[in-house]
Length: 203
Image 1 (cartoon, rainbow, N blue to C red):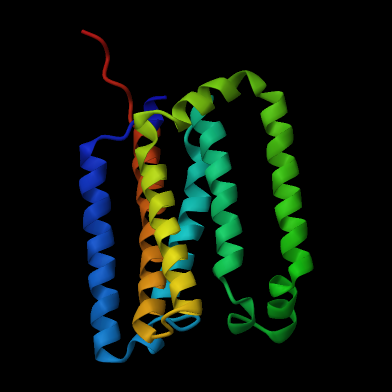
Image 2 (cartoon, rainbow, N blue to C red; image 1 turned 120 degrees about the horizontal axis):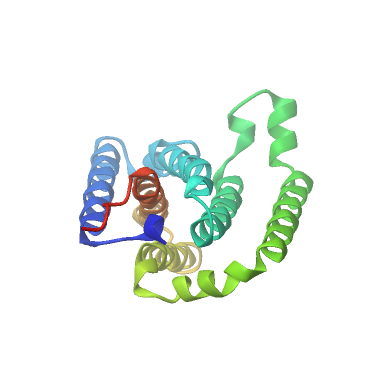
């Protein structure tokens, strides 16, 4: 569980990174417009994709035991969000873009990763109680913070789609999603640092 230790320094780092990225997005939006800043493959969404890709790559390397169970689960969730946010048709040739953006590919990916993770959990079922205890402990606050920020983004999106369709609302929704994914990336880096840093020897 050493790898999953989260203290106040991580909170300050998360706040610093989220504030810095949000300030950049707001400055970009004011220099152009809010619709342009929140567009597909605009600066906000590119930041989201980079953060999700980084978190998905880093989380599985948190070591053995409960950290590995938690890291793999979060990495799979990050891959799901990555596929939801990415518009692959804008990234590459038409064929590959259409293939990766196809619902069938996403369904196969979701099913394959869920089954693989389920098999892993079955093989390491002795670790499940520890992972559940961690999930409801104070140490898991970075994930709860990321989840709360993402829920706030979904609420703003519903307001934007059904009540108040202005560019500022769409931008706010994208900025909140970006903050949520930034929290995950910063947490992954912090946990990886914990995992690879030697523990202090007892005196």
